[in-house]
Image (cartoon, rainbow, N blue to C red; front, side):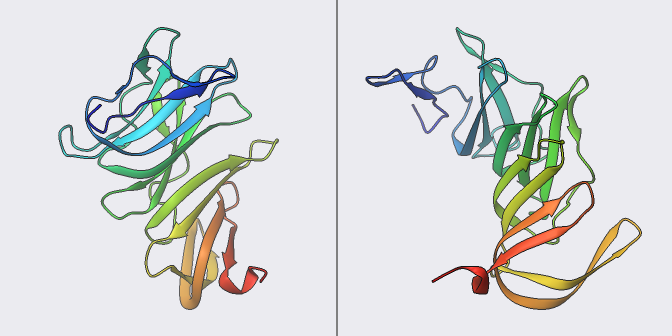
Length: 193
């Protein structure tokens, strides 16, 4: 199908297509899938080439075909996207922006894709982004820092800005609470043998 996005489900005996193969307009990279509160499957993907500017999209299956969920959620190429429904029933996506590689979060509301917090919320570029929620609605993202697997530490909060000062060594995963900007990380020394 020309490296286009395709969705399959297991019907209890075999894997079958959901809709048709190749639901994206062009060749894609990284996909993510979420199931809505009503059981509807949603898929996120980024366009691999610059055919449309390399934007990232979400589609949902309406029972017959796949349809766009709003316009693209990235202003430019978006990578390492992950989608999930929050406790509020809204669809959220975390992705790395092409311009600086930093993590960004959007939610799909009445006005389409809306920025959650600020643009470029991670200290540096990220890969392998994930998003999750506490039952009370607090949003968390987790990612790997993409610059030598390292992040700077000695974090101070001045106003709304996080000031990051010194090098801490290898960091494998980072978790940022978007409500209070608390940053948590799993370093190499935190992993049991």
